[in-house]
Each structure stands twice: as structure tokens, then as C-alpha cells.
Image (cartoon, rainbow, N blue to C red; front, side, top):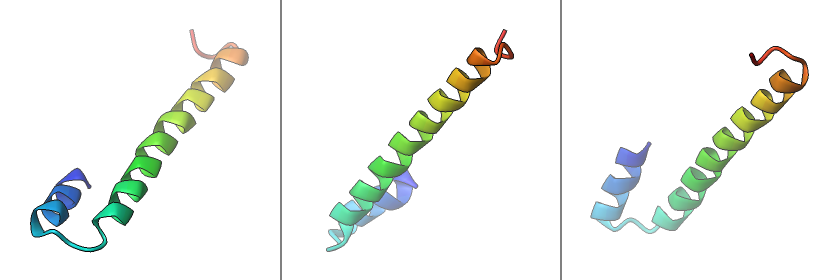
Length: 48
């Protein structure tokens, strides 16, 4: 995904800012989801 983003920056495409936003949301959402899952697992006593 980051390779596609880099290639679009290299080609100077008009939709590059939208790709940056999509990439940022995807990465942020992935981290938030993992953190939430770990918190739930820890709360249920399954994390150790």
C-alpha cells in the first residue's frame, strides 16, 4: 500500500492527498483495533 502511495507521489497524480488520508485512516484504525482487542482480552483475563 505504501508502495502504491509512493508511486503516485512520483507520478504527481491529482488524487495523492486522498490516498494519503486513506492510508493514514487505515493505519490508525489498525492500531486502534488491535489496542481495543488487547484491552478486552486483558480485562477477561485471557492475555497472560
